[in-house]
Image (cartoon, rainbow, N blue to C red; front, side, top):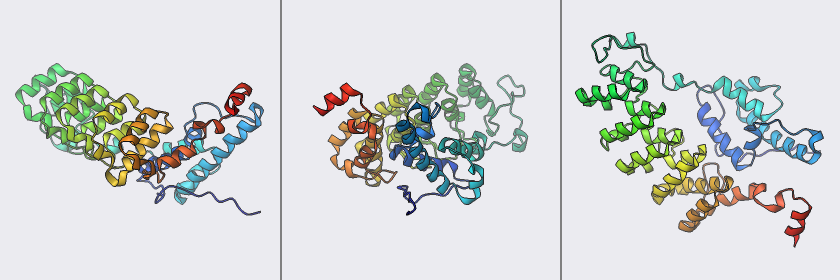
Length: 343
């Protein structure tokens, strides 16, 4: 009997190493979404058992095996030992995440305050409380106020040192606004936006992220609106590592309220960059999430996107064909549903 060959639609498939987990996991997840396999990886319930129904169990087992093979093929020989013996794709995925996903402090490495050779003082002249972000040589007290969520003290400091609002951390590149957004201080972040110039909002951290990118990741719609009102250019500004615009980030994470808002204000030209990859992914993701109104609207505005390849290497048409649950013929029907469908 000929061996079964599992082909991959991952364009230029990356091999996982110690330094690229974020990029690797993102691209493999895209492939799983395109192949309708992600549900077995992110499952929060127990997988079906043979006694639950043979057909259901076999369907799950087939999808799980496909996903597991992809993970095994692209985890790299150095990492294969980490998942050797794992029985499911979910277990393999979670093991690799546990071992290789960088911690937040690794993404934004911080240095001890004493290494900066400064002893910051607080507003009252005393030594400032220790902060988790000890890399602001000029205005550490202000950053401490922001991290602690104390807008009154932060505002008072800014009244005397307005330039503090744009100081970047010496290691992370973060500004006070980046921190406020990341910590979820929406009102403080909105107040900081009002005090910043259009150019200030384009400041990027060490990873190349603007505050709009941070807002898209966090899914904070009202903050995205506030930023957009002051600087619309950020809607079209891509950022690493995937070179996405904020709209794409919101879509892939599933922040649908924010995604709908960003879709309403993002220029169509931004979705047609890179041969329409971004627009193609918006259509595909909308179909996958059954947000058909968005997909239809975008296809009406730009019909060519139906055949444009997205970042996963698939077109929206191919994505639709791969989603069995999107068609009645691919869904188990009860007697009366089948009778009505056949009529």
